[in-house]
Length: 166
Image 1 (cartoon, rainbow, N blue to C red):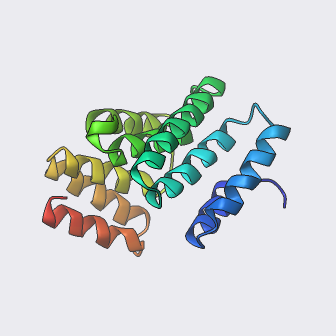
Image 2 (cartoon, one colour):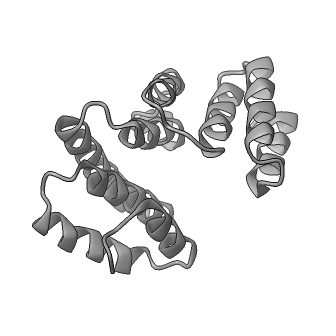
């Protein structure tokens, strides 16, 4: 392997191999403890693990995810990836465990300001705007996502969220 990169991590997660990729990331972190992106990738793996865990494990993993993102931002405060992942985390975390839609929006907008590119950013912004009940802004983000990649599968999912309001 020529190093861990975002596409590789996402492909492994889509194949359900979060345990394997988490182990690879942790091994790579021992070799490159200053690589902020590795902490972001670890946080994404932890998010996947949280989805499959019971409530107590979710709380512990949520703290571990917070630590990974904190370390990523400590190593590189200008990491658009870390801001992007943290923005999603704040939206997806239940409010009683520290989730916050305004913070989600703030981190996603910061990722945008730092140059994060691709169709996923406007889609994640749209999801956050939907949670904030700012439907016009959500529509604008969906339209922008469609400009970037008109056939992206998640566009329909986010449009459905917009129609249902959640």
